[in-house]
Image 1: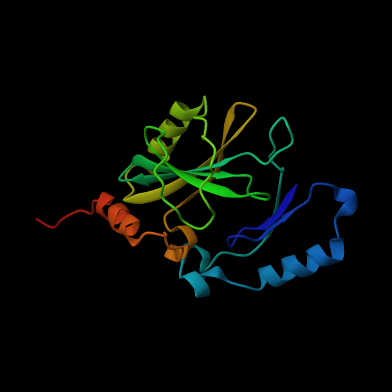
Image 2: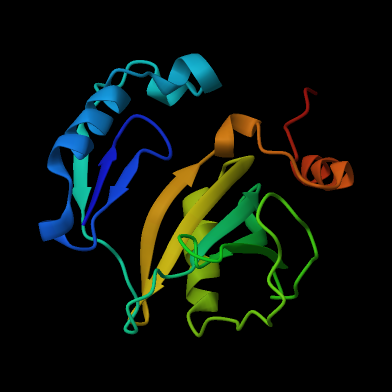
Length: 187
């Protein structure tokens, strides 16, 4: 299972074996997280007035016991244009950006790109449709999905990943993404 807070990002305690969980340490960490308000560091308005609590979720894993890939669909005006593929997040973490036709882009942001070919998931078309539906009528949204046992699972949707603080290695990527956002114009 995973213990996490509802009012922040990155506040996760992953438990693979309940008999090995250091309960006093987990309590101490969770209590420290509960005292923080992510609004004050990142100005993400949705965190400002939320009542902090702890959530316990099922730990997701593939049939071979691995953490599933994290597919983050970056949608611009309801159109998924880039897909972040996080592989082996708690091991040899790699991050690749695929375009809407599942071609590797070479964009780098944080973890290194994989040297392996990234296989297109059988569920890709279904995932694209889910991302379109969930981001409809939004200027920008990132829709996070997982595949476990050929079932597409929803992770989260955000309009401001990392509060906008995570930079791309090439500043031109920021410009390209900014150009994809179409804001309404006054007439």
